[in-house]
Structures are given as structure tokens and as C-alpha cells.
Length: 245
Image (tube, rainbow, N blue to C red; front, side):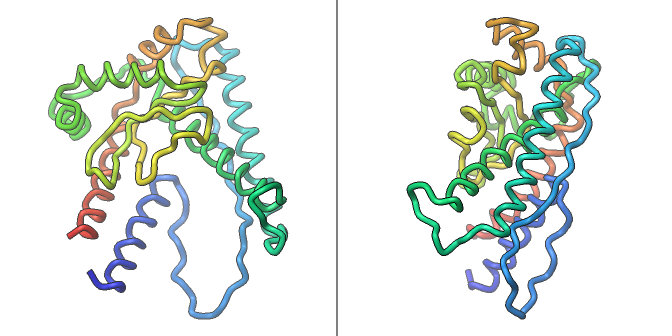
């Protein structure tokens, strides 16, 4: 594939990812030289969770923590704009510390938002002829096997997340164990189902019974919202497939 075509496909993937995260389309590149600007701002969404599987105290505490991560991300972005890049090193430079913290707060903000968006649907239903069901059946053998693997990953996560995501390198959906906010985050993965399995998400209501919490959340997954994520993942799959061909 020519370099020009590869760049076009790469730009399409970037635009799809920005759209899935609710970010505005990327502006066309200007030929004039620009100064690097790191500053950006994102606004935390208010989530109204109708589930009765979580107490109001837990819902309130998780919302406040989510907002704190977003505030932290915005603060880091502002600091990065003025950070000294000339003194960057791998040991303890200000620039390194900011970039590491940026990834932590970035993942925490968006993973938490993805979690809130796809839970708390008391009318939760998944049709067997839906794209979501068919893709999970295709890549896990059957829907029950996806559920078993998803629960196992949730139990294995160390205060982090279990995520079902499309892997653009292997061309299939997989379950992932993400520890804390930024460990084991796979390259080339587009998340479609996200469940927060950190102690703060369930301990007030379930103590150390994480499995009961996971099963309760899975009973109220918002499959309509998840279905839209699968559609976006399929568009990304089509674009990345063109790159390989």
C-alpha cells in the first residue's frame, strides 16, 4: 500500500475513534508550522443510574471520583502546555511525570464513563439476531462462553476493569483484564463492553463478594448502547482491514 493511502486510512481510524469518544472531528492539517499545544478540556457527564443493585451512596461516590479524574486530566493538560520538554528524561523529569499521570487520568475518565454508559438498564434485553450477539457467538463459540470468560476476567482484575473489545490486529473481539487504570491496556483495542471491578465500585454494597456484583451488573447491561459501540467497531474493522489488504 502506498504511503499516501496508508495515511488516509489512518486518518479515517482516528476520526472513528474521536467520534466514539464524543470528541469533535479533527481539523484538517495545515501546511504551516504550528506550536505544539497540549491543553484541552473535557467536561464530566452526569450519570443517572436507575439500577437498584447499587446504593445511592455508591452511585454518588463513584460519580464524584469520576469528576475528580476529569478535573485532574484537565489540570494535567494545562500543565503540559507549559512543560519544559528540553529537560525530559526517563528518571524523574516533570515532563515524564505529567505524561504518565495523563494516561492514568485519561484511562480512568473514559473507562469510567464507558462503564456508566453501558450499565443500569432494568429492561436489559439482547436479541439473538443482533450484531452484538452474533459477534460474541462467533468469537467466543457461544454467548454462554463469553459470559463465563467475562466473569473470570472480572474476578482476575486487580482493582481495575474487565473489557470486551475489538482487537484490530487479530480481527476479533476479546475479553481483557485491565489492572488499576492504566496497566495491561492492550494496543489496538476498541472497547465495546466495560465493567468497573475496582473495590470502590462494589464494596459498600457487596463487601468482598465481587462475583455477585459482576453478575448483577451483567443482568442490567444496556445492550442498545453496547450495540452502537459494536457498529462503530465494525466500521473500524472495515478500515483496518483495508490497511492489511
